[in-house]
Length: 600
Image (tube, rainbow, N blue to C red; front, side, top):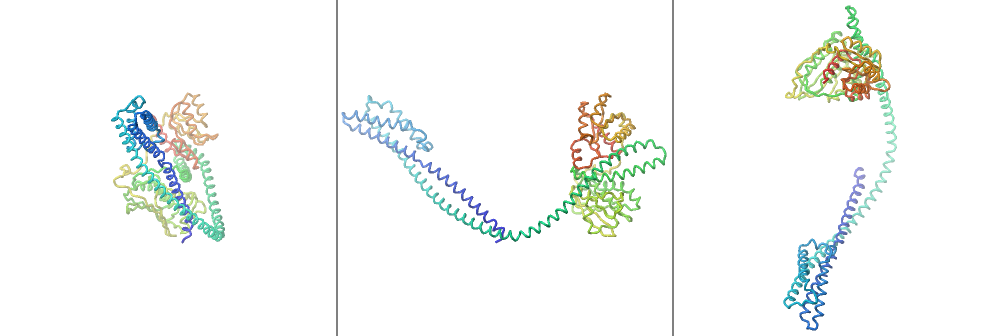
């Protein structure tokens, strides 16, 4: 017998004992109720009434047989017997009747007896003299009632016999159950003793093994905790550095966009474009950290839809063709006409990271993207002719900040977050991700996701997404309140918006904003607020304070440079439109147009 079953024996035996004890308790309680319900009082009542009826009939007979000299005495005797019968019937309580009140025969007997007594009550006096026929009638009715109550008494006696037999059987059952419970208890005790001895022996043999295992676990835990602490510290440092870098970068982007109108020479525009390109490269690096923080914060929303892979591939072609041409690589994107069920933005982010990673590490040859279908699944492959990934490194490349063949930390190859984000986004979308790579030949990343049902394909997904033209003239004449505790950001935002005809008021806090509104008697059409302000205030608080001041639900947006998961969750929960620094001017114009257009 296995040790597992041996360990269960005491528990099972204890459970059996418990069931038996419950059974005994139920039986004992049932027996107690039956003993209380033995019908002694009812039987005594029946016997007493039978005796009274018989005595009354006999006294009537004695009266008939008595001499004239004895009749007065006999009359007093049958009247006395009548009174006794009257009291036992009409003044008996329910405690005496008991279950008789539930018997049909008993109810009929009581009704007939009451009628008999009430009908003859006026004649029961010493002054009244019964005729012979009337006395004989009273005697016959008394005997009939006596026979009726006698029959009820016989039934009650039979019932008492049945109860007595049931109690006797139940006592036998209780006696057997008690023996069974005692035997089970003895078995449980013996088994427990045996198991205790076996457990002590087993514990001695396991003690040394446990000490060795504890040592191994402690070592592994120390290594795991050290790595987790380092990763968390690195993430906190990168989030803090990201926030500090985003503030001046955001202001720089605003100033560069405003400066474009003031640079008239071709050479100046070329220099400005180079500066914008460098700024955009830094922006891409910071956005990688933002994507990671959004995943940590759990604020990435999945918008499931049926979408065209050709539309996604076309966007990849437009976005990465200039970079491929610059590196003299062939970008081979093959359209398939397939539709899949996924989130278009997140799928484009996954494929974009894979293509960017392939372009970063491929120095000659090509990068290809193709899709095939089989058994209701779409398989997307992103392949390159790069140096390949050693087998020992194929799991590590999905770790955060991990990079191969980049000891010089070339910023063009990113921060080592792209594949980490890919791994986490595929889990979010329930997409199967696989890697096939050989050193010196290249690498191929494969994604497997469900095909869209042809009957549910959204016709809106058939069209390729092109660039959206912005009508910046719609900004002209808008009154915009900017709240930010960074002077450069406030000035840059003011300079950019004034160029488009906006009436701009800037403030470093909600209090200053309210003072400006009161002093200038001015109500904004839109509020743009930084999320993290001085004195532990937030943009959400500032927006609500300004709204209370003007007593209007002014459209508002929050622009934040925070990338910590906690801050992102707070900012997202505010419910306001959220943009992340540095904000591209065109994205800012779109957001303003959207909010102003939503005004009632």
